[in-house]
Image 1 (cartoon, rainbow, N blue to C red):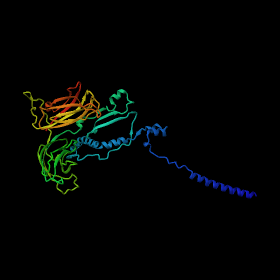
Image 2: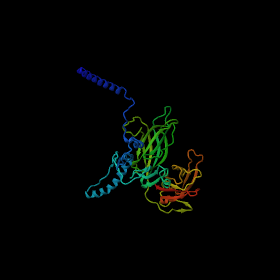
Image 3: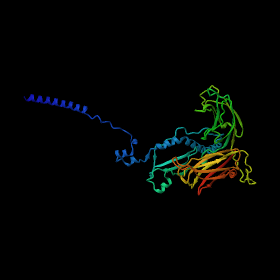
Image 4: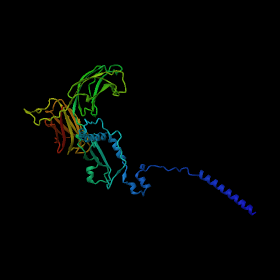
Length: 474
């Protein structure tokens, strides 16, 4: 009996263990919670600051503020600035290398060494890390670098505004809190930007055998022309209705800043009363192909576009142009004008030809408006009108804008009028206000070639405006 009892006990234990394992496995598999999900794994950089503080309350300081910091923002900045940095760095390298090369060419009996092309490539360098030692600055600034120029350091000014008011003391806030800015001049903008060097006289004479674009008629052609690398709007001729051989004989004057890289672009359009105007053809004339002060008549075949790989067998017509590039004269003018009967005359030595009047509106101060002060300047010269941008809510606006007027003769007896107005806000109930004006005689500009002064505004209590005038004879 003892043996049988032991055998049955062992057999029962085996059955019990096996049954327990099977039942436990069944309960674990089939009664396991279905709403349990795998945790989401995300990089720390994607988490906000509150989540990081909750997850890592004891994170050490060296992790929060390491000695070396990544500078992806700087690499992005350099990537956007690289076209300007490339030109500026290469220009500086040439200026440094040329005297050294010139000194050694004679020493080693080399005829000449010239830079045909110098570039650092289209891919900018990248910075891996940055280290700051013993410096702590806590602020949220808005930093604007403008305007961008092709001379190192590739921007003319830095504008800085602080964006959080509650942590800035009243005195600092009154000076730098946006929209007010701290302006840091880096370089002279007038020397960084390309200056006008001449005037291109264009006479659109005529066109013939133009392509017919209208289904029920001929074409209504007109010509738009402009210089490349310029943001100014295109000039255009009159529309010649129902004419495939139009004659315009219209004259235009375009300001040239770089004759080696700029080109005259002409596009002939078919005018449409409704819808988009159809393009008949175009042509481009590089200015470097023109000889200064030498008239040139061209008869050009119109093409569909300037893509040489795309052939266009159909004739689009021809256009006849008369071109004359007149560079500005560098010689200075006498400082004394001739007075005859109270009528101003051009000083001795003043060329009979025309030139370019450059008007720079720098800034104004102490402006006062009755209902609002959102100032902008309006420049009037010989019936032509230009306007600066308007600046909101300031008595001391700074525009730094330049305007150009092409003249057929020196404007000795002419005057320039500059008006300052205030534009109401979009929801304002008050109309535009005049904050003052000034009338400037141009005789001194022709004599001295450049004037930069502050003028008291007429009809203003304390307002003044700074205007710079330059005369470039052609």
